[in-house]
Length: 294
Image (tube, rainbow, N blue to C red):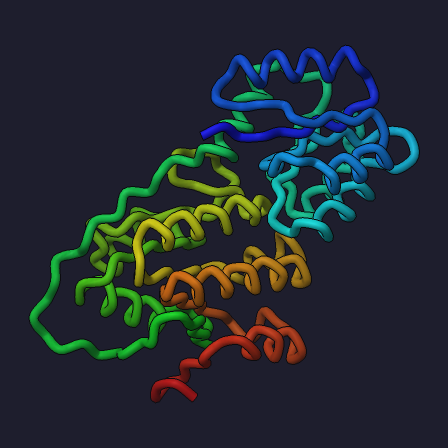
């Protein structure tokens, strides 16, 4: 499968350099390029090829990279954007838009192609079934829904998740807790665990890269029809990304969960959110209380 890439950069020499490095690195094709913001938006709209990723500079004429990113996200909210810029001040705002990465100029071409490969060809998560227990299932969850569990510590949420994966459902655990402790505390021996951490690693995702998290969950539930996902760490994701961006991606994940008939378990500490924020979280979820679904 060929991945189509667009480059937005005001230096033609850099466009040529990026294009050569990208197309030599794998099954990638640079199908569009632009040297200013207005041209970038026009070409993105009119491109005959479906663009998978945009490499974006910040300091470009007519419209800055941040503004261009906002406009193309309005056209296609799922487009992946990778910033390649010398403007370090743009880094925070770029990440708040959900870009997949920020490369500070100057950088080596292998760093550019490494990130592109990670984004466009994420490693497949191998899901194995936990050993099925004979006891009857404690919690009955309907496929295609988010389940919001309000508790200060995610004990009930993990009890529900473990009940699902030990009764024949494949699961994915995304957590702020260290994976080794999760395996010991909840007896998860085979379930894949992704650690929300700024520590780089094979099975970790930077919490500020919420776009990558969404794509990882999407790939998992598509590969494992009717699976169950627990996302433990909403408070941490809010801290790193802000509530508005968090809600934007939670809504995207909810659409994925409904389409793939998966189950999405969301433990949340109400003390970490305002009353209005909790209302937004509850609006599209089934709320699980102490005695079951409220």
